[in-house]
Image 1 (cartoon, rainbow, N blue to C red):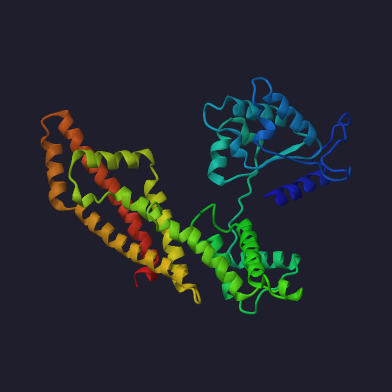
Image 2: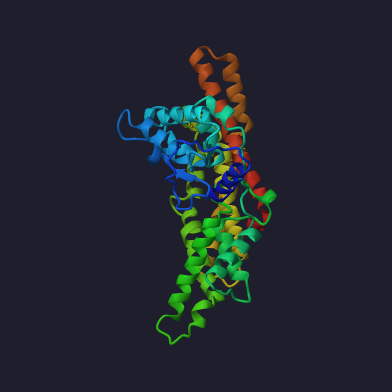
Length: 389
């Protein structure tokens, strides 16, 4: 995002879209006076600790950006909740400056899509003053492999001839997809930074491997298959083993379902309804978690040459996933059993009091919510058939 923001800034300056006021001090962030002014800020640069100081900090940031770009990364962090009056003051001041000095600088805000949508709603003036939006797609696995190679070339490091473990390490560490159309939106996927971390982990594994030996300088520039195997093993332990652990994603999904088939109490259904209502997209959230575990488990179980410990994690997760699928189907059948639905329908029709009718409707609403959640989960299994084969 920062790279593209710099390019856009240079283009706008070159096109004459931005003019630097004649009375502006030429103290820029760089010693090159011909370089495009690019002033990057965050919440801490704009929001003060005391009343009356925030506007001054914003004005100072704008002054440093005149003739160029004010780049606000993770812009949504500027306002932290509806009661953040300091953050709101920063936004209001910035918007006024964007209008008053629109010919003298450009503001580029960056951040995650959903959070940015909420951020732009903090002031009605944002949308009219920020007319252009650029959406960056996740990198695909092949693109991340190429990014990794570029990083290795800069460090003068060489890959092994067999690239399978290199690709396994990067794909599992980043959660990338071979093709974008196969991917579900996830801020953790396709991350170029994760590639750098994986490569640095491989370099550490190589250093540990040759430690104590009388290795040549050339040896320290050649990464081996086993170095990337170590990276994959570490990623499996850090990610998948946690997701399938006692407090992981699978446990969260199981807890939410609460073995619906075992209870018919009003309180049970009331709790289900409350949980679903508190997060309207609960079904999608749980499905996203399950999809992540399914894809990672599938990836681990399809890897060759994986160490015994990591392979065991993959098999354990697969077993838990199969058990949860059976439990989900059983719970779904129990939720939809005709005797319960007939009883509730009769209570709605013949309820002697408003309380009885409301209770019956609560049951029905909870059942519908539970069916939605479990149907979403079963659909995830259908998209990852390799798990249950």
